[in-house]
Every structure is written in C-alpha cells, then in structure tokens.
Amino acid sequence: MPEELPDERLAQLKSTFASIDTDGDGYISEAELKRHFPGLPAEALGAMSQAADSDQDGRYSLEEFIRTVS
Image (cartoon, rainbow, N blue to C red; front, side, top):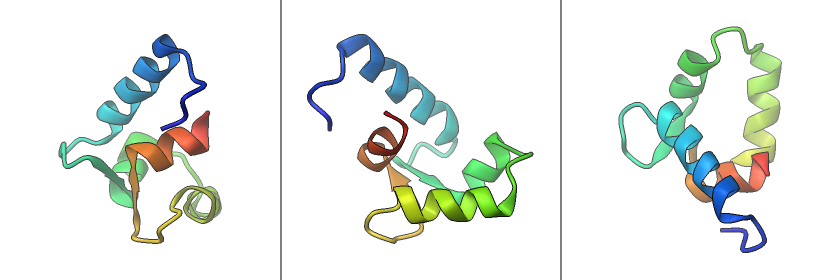
C-alpha cells in the first residue's frame, strides 16, 4: 500500500473499494466494475485492466485499486 497517502485519503479509497466489491471477497471483478459503472465503455474497462490488474488474474485487489487511482 502506498505509504505516502494521508490516512484520510487511504480511508476514502478503502471505502470506495468496499462499495464496488459488492460480494465482499476482497477483490473487484470486472462484473462488479460494470455494475458500479454501467456507462463505462468496454474500451475503458480494457484499458483499466491493462493498467490496474498487475498480476493479470482478472480481478483487482485493494492494493492494485489504490495504486491505480491514487
């Protein structure tokens, strides 16, 4: 987890992650992303996969999410 993030920002990102991770498994799936952002074009989802999913397992961990959006 990026150490340079202020506690308030980190808490905000964790809360956002939890709201997208609707099944509570600790990962955001592409299906959860599509449900949370229904207007997100497929190209944008693909670009996010390339940028965020560093281990290419098809889902986003909290660490991957924070690294991508911070």
